[in-house]
Length: 158
Image (cartoon, rainbow, N blue to C red; front, side, top):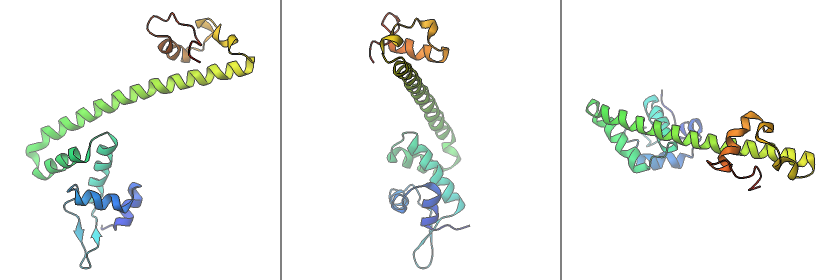
């Protein structure tokens, strides 16, 4: 099936100019053109666009994505390098997700903390809570904020 640049852009949630840029940069070298010069994206082109979007979102630069796309064109001889690239990106994304989860945990803890302070009318009521009175799901975030030693007060940095 053939897709227009507008259809592909809509499916990917990007501007048509982004797809033109990808083509200019050599990321999509095989996009067919109609007799009138309009781009006609194939299912394979659409899949390539999705992979490009994934790699871009994972933190690769356009130059790195171009190198990957060049490997695809080279064929099976580059399979080990492509596999390694995806393993590295996967590990990087897993690391980033762990870091983001820790940030989310702190935000959830601080939300709970301030909800309790607002309800009590004072932050002192929450700051004085012993660790066993902090909900279990928030204890690791509280410990993270208190540092490895855990010696700092609960509300040391409000």
